[in-house]
Length: 312
Ligand code: MTE
Image (cartoon, rainbow, N blue to C red; front, side, top):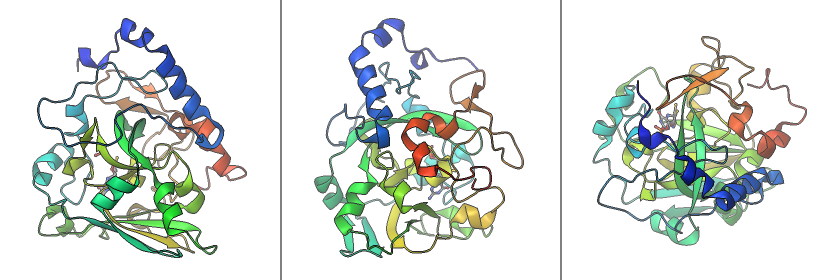
């Protein structure tokens, strides 16, 4: 495989952006992640026209963002198919409007948000995050979104709430993969409440400044950058606050292979393969996997005193 020229950040572009790079670094290193990457248009408009170019953008480590074409043509979305290259075609035309997200459970003010409510109530910003799949491939993606905590604060979790459960839409007539009997549909995921409240835990409605395409989890998905990609659940219709740890699809299918935490950790291998390195889409050689996917300074405190090998 050849490295595409668009994936290499020219030195002059890299050096011309010291202030932005410094800001990204500072923002992400801020204790508890109090500050965040805000460097793009406020909302993710629906764009038509040519495919957006990476324009030398990098994450805070200096890694180039992946090409738009790679991000939207190499996908995991099992409700459509388990074939990564086949998702985009099968998901084309998937109905994403109208759409509602019910936020309920142990909250004082349960609310069902329409997509327009979400777009108006919460200001989207660009957040460039690494996505590291449990299968050991990765990408750098410029999302448009905001912190999940903004939604949770509106509904006011009660003092009994300790976990957050997420559910993907289940529409068999549009999602052929739902007939696959190997999986306990609908797709569900979960976080501890403190993980869900962390500023890096992002609700994305766009990428590359465009509304999400169906294959990327349109119209609204989660992005938890320090965890394996399967925690970043797509096309969310329900967010529920619970007292008990919720069952999740992957943890139900293979508890010894897909833990509830699933923090990216090069020191804890998957039972069937190493997690020490990864294949960045668009690169030739493998690269070392970083603990917490490189977000260790932001999130390690969440796990103080926890045995990460036992709580994988
Ligand atoms: N969400 C749903 N509903 N269904 C899925 O199959 N796959 C997960 C996650 N979210 C998945 C999902 C996995 S394994 C990964 S790696 C990421 O989505 C991939 O996101 P991407 O296709 O946008 O790169």
